[in-house]
Amino acid sequence: MSARKHCVFCGNARTKITKEHAWPNWIRPLLRRSPSTIIGTQPSKKPINFPGKLHDMGITANAVCESCNGGWMAGLENEVRPFLTSMIRDGAETALSRAQQFSLARWMLKTSMVFEFTHAATPFYTFAERDALRNGLLLGATVIWIGRYEGSKFMSTAVAKALNYDIAVEDKVSRHPGSGFTLSVGQFVAQVQTIRTPPEMTGLWVRMPRQFAESVEVLWPRAENEPVQWPPAPSLTDDTLNAFIERFVEDKKA
Image 1 (tube, one colour):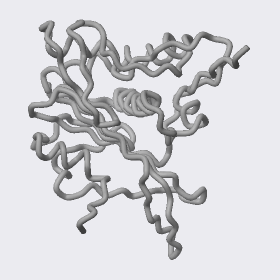
Image 2 (tube, one colour):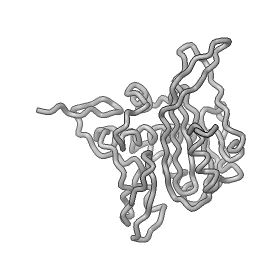
Image 3 (cartoon, helix red, strand yellow):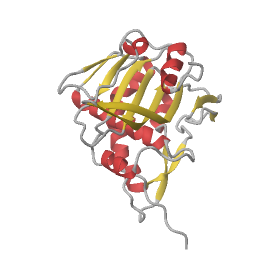
Image 4 (cartoon, helix red, strand yellow):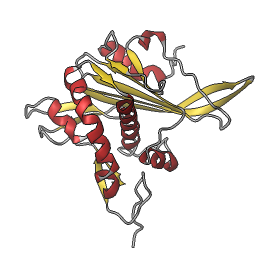
């Protein structure tokens, strides 16, 4: 008998492993409603085709158990869907409360973790980090930015995992790995950056490059009870979105 697969979020091997949609299916009706094929991108940067089904986003990860899929993950989708729908579809001005900030940040981190299992590369996030998110915790050294996108693409994702950061603690500098995940869908765009920091570190300052600073807003972490006013201005365009996605890529010509 072959060993049963363990859920990558809870570790359970007794519950059936299901195909979790990396792009949640509730997003599909917000996009093009015609039966024509639409095109998107995933972390491999290879184009993928979405059939003209109105309720199927197509990309799945066969790594999540039925209990997680239909439990806390479904609950998280229900938390963000009411306010994220108009942000994606209409770019509607939205004031995100502290509770909504937390739900959206957790949703973005969950989405980045699920996308890691849509291809064969070794995931950056550990089981302990995925289990912590399942239990309602956000990783300490994670920063999430959100912005508005007005351009020709309706959805894209990009992953950068082979990142290294020099971190200074007082007069000691050490190098630590990191990961970047960018998602855009409709007029909503978000970027997650996680850095594995030294255990003795109590705080981390991460700078957003000046060319994007006005187009994105920090979603997480923020001061307690401070609302997020979305969208920031100006919006990201095709050119600036591509640069925003690729800001983690080393310039070989430099």
